[in-house]
Image 1: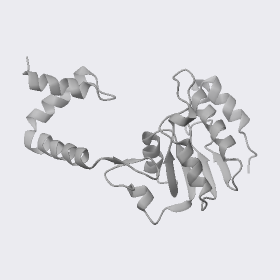
Image 2 (image 1 turned 90 degrees about the horizontal axis):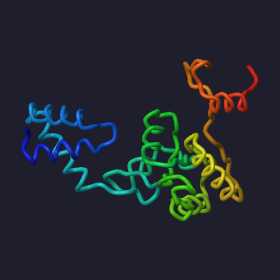
Image 3 (image 1 turned 60 degrees about the vertical axis):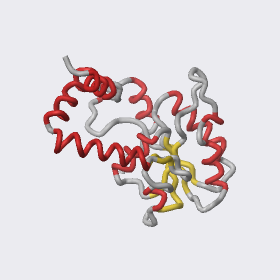
Image 4 (image 1 turned 90 degrees about the vertical axis):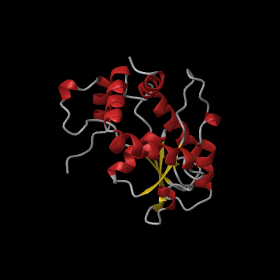
Length: 198
């Protein structure tokens, strides 16, 4: 059996998303085996992030600087704004390197069942950013869930009075997907969003 300190570390790691008790134990054993090359650098990195972690005052991204690296990047097109539910969505889209603009993180999605109302999210900050001008297009990149689409519809209503182009991410068939394995919702969306063959 491990000491209380090692067991506490294992339990702390097991609470992380994607790690269960067995994966956490394997990670702890690896860290202990590679103390100098894995554990020490991990501790330093955690201390650095913990000391400098902040939420961007402009977009809501999490970074070690405020404003975040995306908002401070002069190469980003400030006329394009992509609205996402969570920071993880921002990171996923930014990792693709396909969107040249800036982002806005709502901090969740509208949900009557969970009691999440418009005032609980960063919607007013978004409306203020658009009202300030300089934005030509707002891309609603909500998840393809009922709550995500409800949030997108609500945002469209709030933003319709501004002279902007309002777009939404396409939904439908994934690249490499086979029709036989897709759910009815994905197939229905793909059929509704069909376009002419060029």
